[in-house]
Each structure stands twice: as structure tokens, then as C-alpha cells.
Image (cartoon, rainbow, N blue to C red; front, side, top):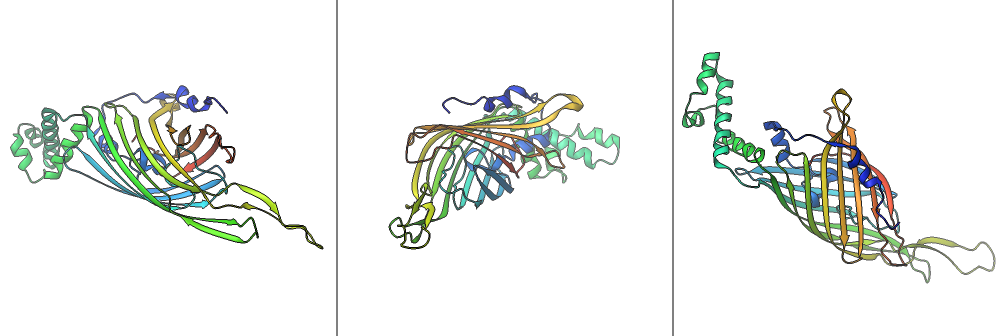
Length: 362
């Protein structure tokens, strides 16, 4: 396969983006609580939850825990992700666009800060006042009392018992995220434990070794004003290990009886270093309109590895929703160019499924 397959662009070509609208406060909070589909810490903040994915003859389960806090407009997110393979396809390496560390149990930590492109003090003050009036009206016993809330001064609203410092901070944060582009930066690091079994080619005895893969990444992204689309890019350095390619070898024919043959890796695990630039685009879309519309989430990731001189693309299409209509699963398609190494088996295209954390633009 030498050219980019058309399926990676098909979903974007057939889906219509959700129109940019004035977001409600609840939508603004959802945006600021950034989550990343499939818990890929390189391209966002993994939402707390459990994810299972399967492709390329292997499957993986991961658990992510995320905590968020803010001081004014910036939103800080800290994620911890633990993942482990449910089974492993011996002799196959991981795809360039795959997040995390394959072929073993790993722990990853990621920090992301999300902030408005610029703060507008006037809009922030206006939002705090509107928040205070709404809080006042919620406590007012009569319609006249509710109307009187709008006439109160800013100081009276903000010093009232129903309006806390936390309320003021939330209002300012919402205003900052609603009235301009939002951008983010993040760092992540991970370390893993991988166990490999192979046979000695001289005497066919069983051997085993353990390895410690690790990765480091840095990413930047932007969410245009009131648009349900995210674009980001970053750099990752990764050291992974894979089984040597399996071969079938036979012992010398015995004088009597059947000859023994074994199919197994007959060498120590291979080290594979990745130094790549990656990009990601996510959009919330819909097919059709009105009562016949179907929610759809699309993520496209691309990467180029300077070590092996290869590139790859992954497209994730979310169409499985939960009871709250959150998109939580779908189909994943991967494609990767040849690595020009005749001793390894190239994997150009695989399709798989995943289910778990809800889809979010971030």
C-alpha cells in the first residue's frame, strides 16, 4: 500500500459539522472538562473511565482517573492511566499513531492546561454580575424580589450569602471560555513492564526477558471560538520492545520417532525507538437533520517517525451512544507505510473496535 486510502477521508466528507452556537454555561463547563477519546494522553486529557479496544489481533484494557481544578480562567487537568494487554499478537509491533505503550502493563501521567486565548476583564465582570443576578433570583421569594435583583450593585450581589467566591470564579471561567478561542498545552510521561518469551535456537530451550518501555510527549492544541472542533499537534519520544518475528525451526531428525518442530521467536525482543511529530483533529458532527439526525464523533490522527522514516494515519469514528446520548464507542481504522526493513513484518492496515470513555472534542 503506497497511497493514503480514501476511507480515512470518507467520514469527514459525508458528515456535516455541528453549527457553531452560543454555548450555554453547562456546555462551557463540558468543554473546560477536557477529555480525550480512547484515553490517549498525548492528545488531550483522558476522561475518568474504563476503555476496551481491540485491533491488529490484540486487545487492551485501560483505566483512567482525572482530576480538574482551576484558578480563574485556566483549567488544569491531571490524569493517571493504567493499561494492560488482554492478549498479545506475537511478532507484531504497534502502530505509529497508537497512544500509550504496547506489549505490557504501563502507567502514564499527563498534565494539561486549558486557557482562553486572551482574557477580557469587561466580559468577565459582566458574566460575574449575570451569575450574581441569577443566584439572587433563585433565592427571591416573589417576582418583585426577583426584579429587584437586577437593580443591585455588583458589590451587593457579590457579598451576598448566596454568592460565594467559587461562584465568582466559575462565572469568570465560563466567560473566558465562551468569548474567544481556547488553547491548551500538555505534557505526558509513561513507563511500562513487558515480559517476553522465546526459544534458544541452538538447543530449543525456553528463555524469557523483561524490558522497560517508556515515553515522553509534549502537545499544543486550539479550540476555535464556539466551534465543536479541536486541532492539535505535538512531539513524542518512545522506546518500546516487541517480540522478534516468529519462525518455524525443527530439531535434527531422530533415529526413530517423529521430528520435533517449533514455531516461536528465536531471538531476544527487538527494541524500537520512535521520535515522531503527530497531529490530531476532532469534530462533533451529525448525519442528517431534525428528527432524522444521527450524532457522530470523528477523530483523525497522523504521525511521521523520523527514526524509521514512516508515517501513519488513524481514523476513529464514534457512533455508539449510551443512555445519556454520549458517544462512547465505534470503529477504528489504521494505516501505516512500510518501514523498508526486510527483517520485520509490515502492518499496513487494520480495523478494530473500541468502547469506553465518552467522546469529547478535547
